[in-house]
Length: 361
Ligand SMILES: Cc1cc2nc3c(=O)[nH]c(=O)nc-3n(C[C@H](O)[C@H](O)[C@H](O)COP(=O)(O)OP(=O)(O)OC[C@H]3O[C@@H](n4cnc5c(N)ncnc54)[C@H](O)[C@@H]3O)c2cc1C
Image 1 (cartoon, helix red, strand yellow):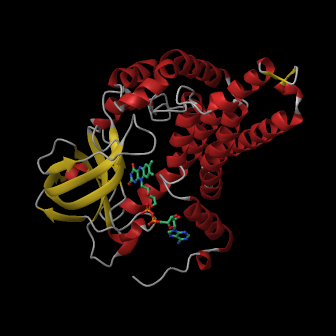
Image 2 (image 1 turned 90 degrees about the vertical axis):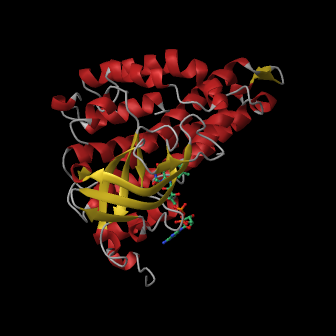
Image 3 (image 1 turned 135 degrees about the vertical axis):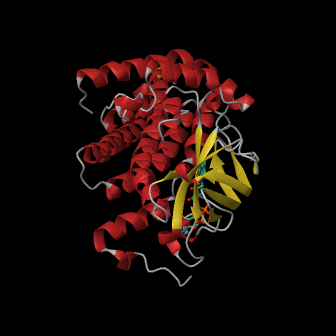
């Protein structure tokens, strides 16, 4: 990835922050399962949040590629006038509520009811599998304002403060990503003003789909960052660990799998940045984002696994970070869309809607 001077400066800042502030407590935070809000605020103060948003609301107005650089370097934890500055400063955490107990991949069939009542919308139903469910300060909620059979054309997006009367939330006991957590959010007669609507009524689905093309490339870069950290540690280890009177770096059975991983991760990194650069240029990038979203987490998982094995019996310890990285990237194989759905998206981009002949609702 070729960076300009501003991007190089932000990359160095993100790298230093990840090395000095995130890495030392990486495993301890996983054990505690508590999101460190002070760290988020610090990221906000350093200008590592919302860099691609306009300067008028506190962002840097930087290209999306810059956000990609930060996502890769941190490889972790990672709208109106009121909310965006608070999100950028790290004061406010926003969850995104799309998935429901009966619909995930088929998000267009969501049921959460949203009815207009004067100057308000009233929400009833459940969202599930929501990142930050129990610690978010607000949620972007996608809900059905159209008829039950209106599909993707009857969905509206609203900002709902987490402390609004009628909101309740839970936390799941997950395999990984313990720091950010995941859970259900329940809405019972939750009333929000019409001004909290994002975009037009019944047009929320277009928003969520456009956002995915960006977030999928960023997720891939987070996985690239995790895998690269394990690769760098494994390469170092091969130089110091000896077996049969030689460093294990002298055995091609050790180095070639690491070379394969390094090569795959380098290729995925480039395609991820390419997807974001296409977005910055206003060009179609749906297929590229879907490609890296399925390849990034899966390849990162396999590569980190190989790195764990490179450490021999030492690798099979909770004290080393590889197991945590594997658990964290595995969740990203599902979140924001599974590999199966990503491949459907790429096929649809290539041959049109014939690639997605769904059953009748
Ligand atoms: C770590 C994590 C974080 C998440 N964060 C959020 C969040 O913040 N907000 C949110 O709204 N959701 C979130 N999710 C939910 C996630 O987006 C959904 O789990 C995902 O979209 C899949 O939906 P599902 O689990 O209902 O699986 P289903 O849709 O039930 O699919 C089950 C299986 O069938 C396959 N499948 C389904 N349809 C097809 C098809 N047509 N062709 C081929 N294969 C198919 C899928 O690939 C999958 O393997 C998160 C999930 C995880 C694991």
